[in-house]
Length: 534
Image 1: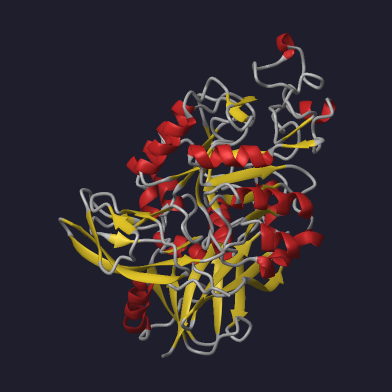
Image 2: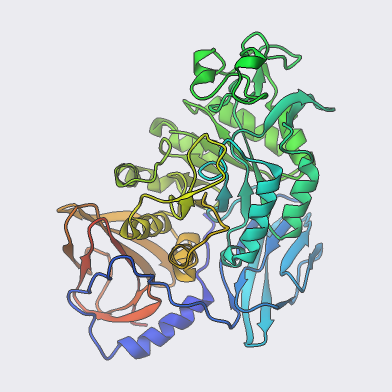
């Protein structure tokens, strides 16, 4: 199995921890934070290289990767011993090119600004696997939803850069449902509706910003939102035998009406003519890097067929399958898809978050580089109404503690970090949740699956190996009252003493000798990084 190396910046942080924490004990109990407070420290103006630093591509495929570095702009970038076939844009930190020969290529990189410079190492693996770290990015479904357009996708892409999210590894800008028009073009593939006048130029602009583009479809004849899918009743791609009359469609290209229109009209099934292969060629030609294929029940033969079509498209395209993958097929799905939904659709309330979190333990052995469990999108920030053509957004219904819970839990289980919020009005608290480089590092580092080691009185403790003697430990309170959780180091599979770092606060918490004793707010979480004596 490919091991994702841990961060050099955290190595430095833990070196400091050895000195600062060795002389004091970790408080017992370690206090819960004041509710609603931003725990992430202010961002440093000095350059810091963030995750991801590991990228995968197939031989000869186009490569685009970025040196994700936070700090004051302008910033300049450098790379020594760059593999033949790759080139670096020194102003943006974007690396592009192709590598034909399989292998692992590691090379040093540098980021510099008026406050100093920093160095790190990036790695490209050329082989059969792509998507070597959990995808990070944005999706349109919980924001623009039914009103998604080329204009607001490009607006979001620019905001990803301007807001600094791209500096922390968020790279995918994904169109969800509602982009589809009619079939046509040289492949008789799905063409976009009038809200997307030029898909190819849109993808080119997203790439120019150092980001990647994603799109949505289904192997059904009709999508959940009532647009045409990847199969057809006939070879002409003519859906008129199933579609609503034009005067009864909510939008002109919404052939089957709003959800559950496709189910009601018989389009929510795989049709007699498979056209995903044609669509895949079109996506590749446009320049897409990611596709979400959405249907129920997810099945292995269809997934394998979609995967084969993408591999023949001429471009590396991440395959995300959605939704509610049957656990009985976790084995074969985890060998075929890059991302698979382990749940139904998430909602921005505690009941939904708690239910999803409680169902993830059994899935953990199937995660690994190139293949990730997906408990659905982060419900953080200002959101729209699902299925509506939103122009205004409301704050998530998750409390601040519940937002810390979700981000901490998703980090611990190596879940994709896909946000869907309005980026134009990103407040300081939300930015602190999304842009904590040490929390993101826990998410992006993989040396083995996460494991739940304690469950009592509504609280859980999870561990995740991070390599080189380091372990992430997550504490989670699913109850409605403040709780104090005691866990012996032996249950964490660790020896005494352990140097403890509070990952959210990015500060050293002291030394744990026999146990950890942590206070948690209702629906709250705490996330720590532990390292034993060298």
